[in-house]
Image 1 (cartoon, rainbow, N blue to C red):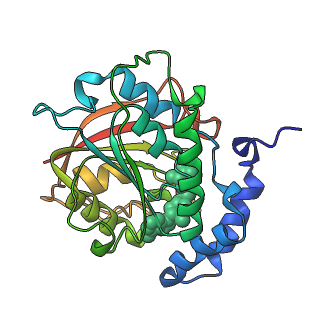
Image 2 (cartoon, rainbow, N blue to C red):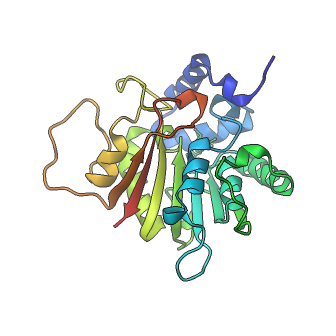
Length: 269
Ligand SMILES: C[S@@+](CC[C@H](N)C(=O)[O-])C[C@H]1O[C@@H](n2cnc3c(N)ncnc32)[C@H](O)[C@@H]1O
């Protein structure tokens, strides 16, 4: 029988995740995440491999996502809520200097071990059909810290930030802070890449994963608070700190979001 983590992402597991968070107040959510790591429950969300949609975007759109900046320096990427670090390692293999940020000390330790082994002998799942080995590998580092605390990433700014199942892991009342922190962490003109998931869940349902239909657009382009359900009157006159440059239905994505995931690329104004 297969024990691939992606296959374990059943509705039953999602219900366990929701039940786990129902018991905690919003202030306790950081502890609730670290508790899941400490009790070996990361199978509830772990997909077991880097994002196929992100791999394809990077390999096929080198015009916008080259790991080398016009001035010749290597670009820096951040993956907040990086889990086991699959996307951190994959981005480094594609030439970026990458930082993974995780609230769980155990998660960081697992990610460091994964990175050590994977960088020695990278598996085929790190590369897509358009892979060309022309950039040297970038660096990998992990930070144990809270995304919302400015002290965890001290004064650094990034060219690229990738979010997958981090926004949907946060209580909806944290969304405005998520957008503001993303804006602070990116250089002007930097890109926030979001693999939007889950877009298929009834917006009235609790999370995690909290349903995200329309949430990224509201937060990043419209400058709203990301609370889009139940619908409220438009907040006229506000604009966000980001401009959406691309909105793509990826040909490949994880099984759990296949056919519904969208990949959005937001440019920091
Ligand atoms: C749903 S998991 C996704 C993990 C990873 N992106 C993946 O695809 O496997 C959300 C992750 O965010 C981490 N996390 C939650 N709140 C955080 C915070 N405030 N700062 C940093 N990491 C956080 C959790 O520990 C967890 O590993």
